Length: 80
Figure 1 (cartoon, rainbow, N blue to C red):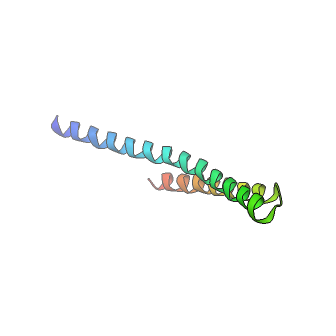
Figure 2: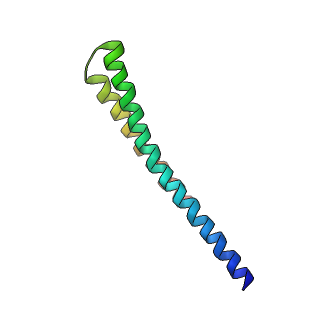
Figure 3: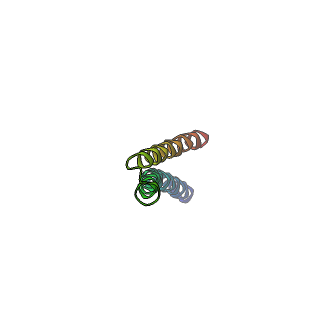
């Protein structure tokens, strides 16, 4: 009975580890888009004065980085 309790704790530990990983994944996706948007907005307003173009380009790059994070997470979850 003691061993079964130990196995339950290991399974719970693994579950919380996966839960933490996927919740941090959603945070990194949102953060990559916000960083891309911020860099593009800063370049448009402070450096080049080309209103929406750099904002759109860097927002697109942020979205691509977010999808890359999703792809890498799926690839990692298949190895587990």
